Amino acid sequence: MKNKLKTENYNLLYLFKELDNKKINYSVLRNYQSLPNSTGGSDLDILIGVESINEFNNLLIQFIKEKDLKLVSVIDDKYCPKYCISEIGWGIQIDTFRKSVYFGNNEIILSKILFENTVKYNGVNVLNKRVGTLLAFLKELLNNKFCEDKYIVDLQNQFLGQDIEATLLSQFTSPFISYLNQNLTQLDKKHCLELHKLSKTSFKRSKFYSLSKKIKRLFKQPGFTIAFLGVDGAGKTTIINSITPKLNQAFHKAIYYEHMRPNRLISIARLLGKKEEFRGPVTNPHGSSTSGYLGSLLRWSYYMLDYTFGFYLKVWPKKSIRSCAWIFDRYYYDYLIDPKRGRINLPTWILKFGQVIIPEPDIILCLGTDAKSIHKRKPELTLKEVERQVLELKAFCVSHKKAVWIDTGKDIETSSNDTLDAITTMMAKRFESLNSTK
Image (cartoon, rainbow, N blue to C red; front, side):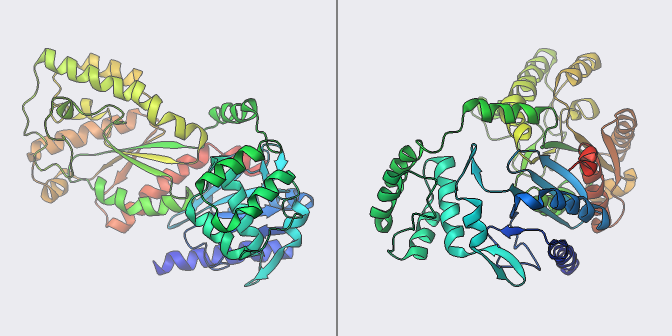
């Protein structure tokens, strides 16, 4: 933990020092209480003056290169590109508001007003809390039609019964301003719905505009799917638990976990009214009897629906438009490596046919070490079976271009760091071209 905080401190101090050295006009919009030493677990929302955009882009490239960081995800938006940056043990998401904060093509609060209300906090340029609270409330209102209580309470506390100045709300109509000020002290979700209706006169975001942005992201998706494979005892759960908090920093808490498959469809066990098949570590992976040919075919066909349609209904929409990572503890490939565990008894050609149809993970991590060490950790399977699965997994890893072998015979910290390095390296390849263009 100390090393992580030390790394974060050095990286952020460097970034803000360079912002000042290069005289970049900027303002951190919110969650700046821990700056410049830490983001406090938040993303970094930073407004960049129109005259400083090119200089800031160059600084971002310099920051990544000089600190040996990796750009693991980008949402390339006209007004607010988002950058996810990572290294072993640390990560950050930077939301860069260019010139102003927009909804559709309109500024929510004029950029001139935002920079006029920027102050120094621990040597960092930040938007003063009063205007920052109003901006957060308006963003939430325009995007979601209502506001959570925390936004309402913060707004009321900042203005303490006073009217919100018309200059701050110059982008809104007179009826909107009047209604907000008249109801500010007793503001609730019902009032927010009415305010959202009144805002439509000034703020319209065409469906085509939103759709075009999403379509553009499909060609370079900001999200990833990561599959972890390995025999029981290889260290999958331990390593997943170790790296998830670190990935969360770069992807700002957008890490999703699934076991084996997308789970858009309920398990066959639940479908038949039985207990859930997976509720934690499996102590006897080969304890259930394998289904016959017809039963195996039905089981495989049902779960193929989840791997295909379930994936496109649950996983694909988020990874296509949002910087995120879906972690799968095991995946379809287990049917080939350990079919007995999945109670599948089908010809290999059928299972390989399914492998061609299913959506392939972006990154496949094959975890393992020598069979005797794995068997010593978890002797649920025979040593001979463990040896067979390790060999099968190694052969799969060699033959698959998206697979990486992780030696888990090392200590946990080293294995976790090797895993995180493999993940971020493969993620960064997708955005290599942006390092020289942004």
